[in-house]
Each structure stands twice: as structure tokens, then as C-alpha cells.
Image (cartoon, rainbow, N blue to C red; front, side):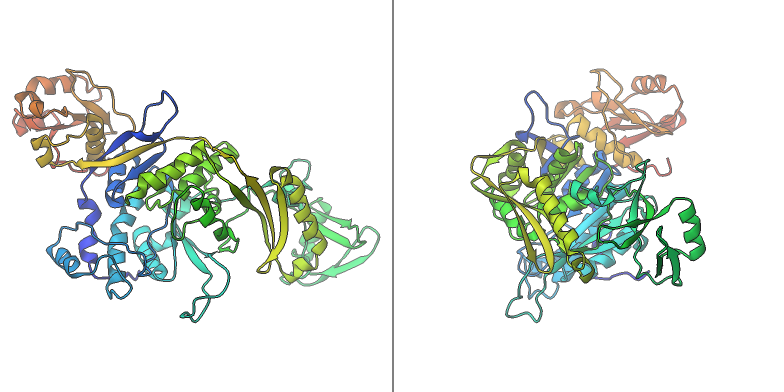
Length: 590
């Protein structure tokens, strides 16, 4: 498979492995939790910190557990003011960045290399966080879409490419300096493993489901109409109930048609206009598939969706876009991750979907900028609790692109628009029906002068702690908690996440979890005095206690600051000692 080479690739290729683990530090005061509920890393999270380090911090808890990722990274237009400053441990990289312009500007001849250096390790960690049957969506535009797809082919595998969605972003003319009016950007979609990815469907809403109103007795099939213009078969005549001969291309071969007609899977009915309609039975779909051409005018609502919270963002993504993408994930308890959170649109979409269908989806947002609390978290808090707003809310209820075939059925289009108005009208002050850019658009308008109802939910706000290193352990500088270090050592030793850390006894043996072949112990207290004492060392009585509880005779992995036993003796007893924390290694193949 062809690969994309870029300056710095050899240095960032494995950079994600050298990024230090950090503890996620809960900030209860900045969290939004129901009364009496303690903050938890298992619920909705908003993390303030470098997204590369945040992704690494999430691995011990969420590796292989994320059902869907959506990210909106810098498009690298040269006007965004983003900086590349990852601490890659290479003198050549450091020298290169020292001489380079930061932030990355349009006239920086190496801006594409820097962007790729920034994206590579983050994509590697995102890949590790995804569940086996999961999907990732990435917004991007013409500046980097071709390079990003090449990198994704390498990280995810080109066989896991799903789609390149073209999304409408504006209407109207382009700038005076441009040759064309560019009205779209893209959303790239890749699977973790395409062969086991479940079918992705958007559930039908009430007005769309009207198409399937004529169902059979089992409600597993509906009646659809043959298109006589279909040309894959040889034209032949069929006979209507009144003897009228109807000639056309009937989608099925003549013998198959006769067989299905006799079996009751095809019927011929007269329409109100006197014409005959030939209908065939189709299995009821689970929903409609995502379309690769997204021409809905969602972009028009995005600035208002953000500004009503007192937040200003350039080019925010519309909630409807995220709802559209995330609704296709079949799990209603899906875990959704956005590591370029920005204004928090992903969280707003998750909460809206849960409100709509009673789901229990969870979100994890990561934002490195200073506005993570005052803007990102503030917006999500208001979405949860409700907010005051004086203005008009707009919701697009229908966006039907017009074709010649649809115009010939204008009466049906009018009926469809009016039925939506009847169905949805009570929820709005006004429903407008207009033609915009070749489409029939039905929009609901609601004047709000008091408070928009909250969607409910909660989140825990976190920051990143100091890196977990031997130097910090010895110095006693902001020691990680037992639970945080337990999840860290268990993941790095076994490649598996530790959902719950067993409650530890004061004089316990530090057992934290096991795999099919290993029992893992962490002998540790977040106390500098204790760590520097003989009490922190692995001793023979302690090993005997661990062995006594090892009923299945598995090998033991024991993490401790020191040991007072010879390695030969430990090996003979099936114990592998791991010095905290850098002697940690992953046991492969278990």
C-alpha cells in the first residue's frame, strides 16, 4: 500500500508510545452533578488539557471501549493560529520547531508537515481507544483532506475506509480572490474493523415513516411502487385486474414477476387519478442510511446555537450535523469521544439524542484551550440545566431536494410539507415552507423570551495531573492516587482496562485484577514517607500471602518500589517483580 511521507514522520511514528501517562484529576467544583452524586470517571467527562496527553490518560480506563469518535481538528488554512509544540524527544525535531514559525501561518512552507506531525500520534491513540466494532468521523476541508485520507489509510487500514461525505457549509458567492464559490467541506468516516461494523441507520421520524404507512399484516414489509423506467430487464406486458395491458421494465424478469405476483408479493392497484400502480413488497428497513452528500442547510443554525450561550466561535459545527452522524450508531448507550471539543457541540448532540429516544449515551470531551471551562463546559452546563434566551429558535423539519421526477409529483410534495406542519406545528409558533437552493425547506420557528428547557444530564470536569514517573514518585511530588496508578500499571502490563479497582485493606497484598494467565498486584501508597521506607518493599511474607490467595496458580505480576528477595527465588515461585513505574511492560498474547 502506498504511504505518505512527510518531514518529521520518522520521529513521530512511535511518539504516542513515549507520551507519559497522567492522572485525570477531578475538579468537583467545576463539574455539573446531581445533588448527592459523587464525580466519576465513568460518566460524561470534560477534560481540560493537551489532547495528546488526555488521550494517553484515557487509555487505562477506556482503551477499546469507545463506540464512536468525532473530531474537528484544525483545517490548517493558515489563518487559524494553531501551534505545533508536541514535546517529541528528538534533538532534530526540537531544532526544527525552534526555527519554525509558531503559530502555523499560511506562508509557512512546512505547515502541512507540522499538521501531519500533530495528527499522527493523536490518530494512533484514537485508534487504540476505539472498540472493535466502532467508527470515527473527522471533519476536514480541501487543505488537508487528501493527506488526512492517506494517513488514515495507514493508521486504520485502507480496507476500513467507509465514506467521504461532502457537507454543505454555506451558500452564495465566494471571495473576490477565489476562482470558485466553495460551498462544502468533508467528513471522513473509517471503521476500526469494517467487517464487524454493524449496519448504520438513521431511525425514521414520523413524517418520513409515512412512506411506509401501507404495511402488510406482519409489519415486516411495506408496499413500494415499481419504476417503469428501470431498464435492466427486457420490457414485457402485464395485465391489470380490469384487463388493461401495462408494458414496461418491471425490475424483475417476467418469470420472477409472475411467480411473485402469484405468491402475493406484487399487487396492482388503481390510483386516485385512474392510473394503475404496480407495487411490490419490500422488507421494512431499520432506517435510512447516511447519504454521502449532505446538502441540508444545517450550517445556518450553527452560529446562533453557540452565540445564544454567550460564546463566540469561528466556524462552529451545527448540532444537527452531530445528531445526524451520531444517531447512526446503533447503540443507545454508546460512548462518544471528541478530542477537539471546541464549543462542545458533540456533548449538546449527545444530550439531545438521549432526550429524544431515552438513550444513555455518554460523551468525553477534550479541550486544551483556556476556554475549556468558561466556554465549552459553560455551554454544556446550560444545555443540561436550561438557559435564558430572548430570540427565535429555528429547527429545520424537512429538506427535500427537488428533481424533475419529484416536480411531476408536486401534489405529493405539497401534501408531505403540509403533513409535517400538522404533525410538528403545535411545537412551534410558526412553520414556514420555502424553496431554497433547489430544495423544499420546512422550518419551525419558536419565539423564546424566558427559559429554554434543559435536556438533563451531568458531567465531571477534569484536568491532567503530573506525569507518572520514577522521579516524581521518589520526590513525592503530587503522587498519583492508588486507583489511578492501579489502572495505569494494569493497562500497561496487560493491554487491558481495569473497570473497577478492588477496595484495599490497610494490610492487604495490593491485588488489583487478573487476566486468563496473570494476577496483578500493586503494593503502593501515595505517601512519600511510606514509599521511602522498608515497608514499601516486597518481602517473603508478603509474597506468601499473595501465593496463598492464588487459587488458580497463575503467574503473579507484582508492582512495588523495591524488593527484599532475590529474583531467582521470585522466578521459582512464579512471581515477576516490576519496579515502579518504569519497569512496566506489556505481556503479549494473554
